Length: 532
Image 1 (cartoon, rainbow, N blue to C red):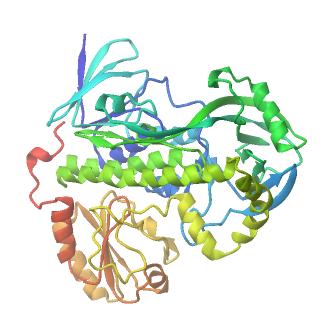
Image 2 (cartoon, helix red, strand yellow; image 1 turned 30 degrees about the horizontal axis):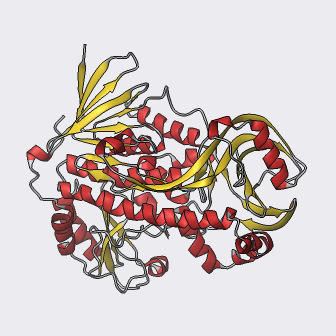
Image 3 (cartoon, rainbow, N blue to C red; image 1 turned 90 degrees about the vertical axis):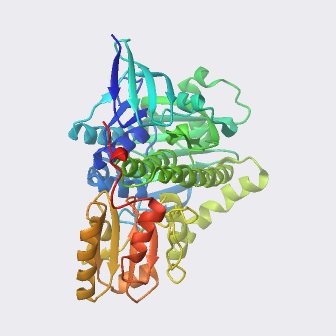
């Protein structure tokens, strides 16, 4: 007998992106259903690089410490060519002063999914495993999805919104009729998790460069365990499913020119690299996130992290609209902000891939004869670190051109509306420790406590359920982070991006922003609240 489930949000796909959206919705108390055609979370390591911005997101839901404990910090990078170490870059503290997590964490996708899944279960939520989307339709008032359950029964799910996190071949995207524009690299990549016996230490990421290729060895938790990634030459003509591991092993031996033994292979795979993004990330009441919305070169380990940030951006907007605290126009800013980011990411990773594996003579010369020797010296300069780390770690992603970013008074500030909240410490504690509540954050930077207390009382009387309040002393760290030494106020969005900065110490701009930009009214329309 066919049954019907009613909920607020249905999430198609329970990979890192879908799980992340679900965790954020649980944090806001929004009801949802997550379904996936697989039997459970992936048993394979897949993506492994976790960047600072992702760990900052994990921190808000209490998962950062667990992630760091289960992973391995990439302490340094060794650059090799011709079987010889040519240079060494130290990375363990490359983002010092920019994030509480100034490094790249090696933590397999399977472990990330396990952390997120455990969080959902601790909040009384479960995944509909072995459940496949058959079809869906939408109207102005909701979405109806038809699914096939693990028992083979047909089930209907009625929701207010649908989010497709169903991978690069996304049935959601196809049903919505959205294009997936871009290209495919001709060359084939390979990946394997295995133990590597060699004389090189396990405390570094090893990059073996050659004239038209590379082989990467990422250290994983466990003795001599590595993720190995490389690329076959342009002349390699086999299809993905026809490649034997022996061919991968032979390629590793030839390209590295090292005395090594790769064994205890846990899994391996081959794949073509695509660089594409959907024409839009939303249509009506349906949204795309993660690989369903964009795919790109694995250079820089951006994929999983970008999907998690998609979910982080979308979830708070869905929650506020469903709770009647924001106008539905707020949802339009998801595609506005994340599509621009995806386009920039595709351009950046494409350029990086050409430098890493391009066969042009000039690039090959630079890769083998210049890069290994220069890189270690370049990273000794703080200015270079402060440029590279934000780009790699995704803390540098900004939404300055977003309609949610109001620039009226930020010209004299070092940071601008649309930037991530800069990291600094207050009384020995990270500023982010004060920003865990799933709300907007009103921050007052002043040493005049009487003025601050008066504003706090006024805010609590009007917006206590919507905005929390933090008074921060105007000390040298604050002045350095923001570039001003006079009192100011700031509104942070729930995802800790700056809505606006102000030199006024009143609630006037806050009130205007919440009503005009977010679409909040003091008397919420009862029909706009959660209905299920």
